[in-house]
Length: 321
Length: 256
Image (cartoon, rainbow over all chains, first blue to last red; front, top):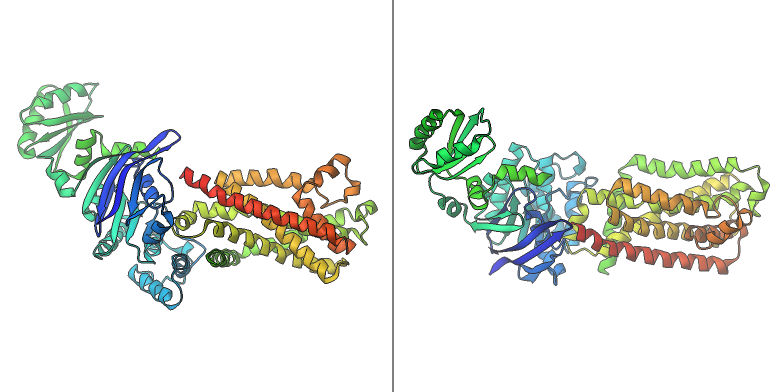
């Protein structure tokens, strides 16, 4: 059975179509990643699935229950870790967990045991009785996850679990999520705008752009669809000749998907090491000044570029505004 | 039952978090005392303002108790803004907690604090020569009036908090509602000394319902019939504003 089924979800805020017909399914026990830049609609999708907000149209089932019609059933079957920490700053870590557990219907000794177990699991046992205001960002995030898990949910939503964390805390969080994923019964839907995060954690990924799912598959499948390597050439003193440079590169043998972006020309070639000398000498012969050349094996960045025709980092910046 | 349990847990959370901010607790104690002592001195020589009480302070004490209660209620929505900013509310809304319990706990918290402050003010008042002419029943009426006033305005305040969701807008709204209602009431002067049009308007002012009830209890020590009506009106207002605030969760959820 699928743990999450989403059919044609649409949701519009005043002037933004946040969800524009989103459909996907997540298998039970799977870690599924919604990957996309800021403002793509990932968080709206998760908030809808977590019953925080309602779609304008479409249907979604979580653990077999309709998120609109049986919202309260869904709420006891899911753990929701929002993009922004939901920790009560004035309470201790333990108090945060106890309250959430009570709301979820736990009580007495089983609740206390479960809370101890979770504090241990997320490495907050020693800090358990300190006020959460003094926790670091990473500690608050780990407490968030413990809060989401207190009632042993069937589905866990992790909305941008590592945004705002320093690299060390991010690495620790990845280990945490991998450990949770190892529990067979738990389905995890995670959203991220870090490509390497989706690549590392998610068994399957759906790329979201402008409220739509652009492509879906395992990270390997998505990358395998892109043959060859990506070459990026950085030019200086262009004087508006970017179009010309793109044409030159596109005319070379084996180059495909050539695109210009600012001072950069990108192209896909079967073999980077062979192609670079030709590219360099041809551009040089036509009077272009090359600042740098890089090649890369296909990453999810490239997958994004390939399927949306847009650069991930640029979109991400634009989405923040 | 579930509603009461959830409300109970949430009230415990509110009060526990409050006690952890000693500066707030200190302000909650000191501020009403300043009102009582300051206004008590300011108008103490104006005999016409006593409204039949033995001293201006005796006349003023129930008024200040009510002013304090309704100010406390009006500002209580700041706690909701804080919870919204910290995304604690989102976490609750994604869990099977009763929305009404979230509101009710805030409303009850405002009422409890108002009663504590009323007790303190009455005790200080006794030291300044105030007599509660209504006896034990009088004390209870003062507590009921202050609790209900705080609760009625807490409901309104939380509704507004969920609609505006910003601290600055919340402050503006609380001032916009609070100050006119204070001056359209008998908090500082007896109705007989008001301009006629203010006296007429004040009859429809919930703040004034509380003030009249508390003053009947302290100064008059009687008129229990009208007093009961005032308290019932405040109870109805509490129900209406609490339901309004609960309904405002929909507006909030539509915005996220």
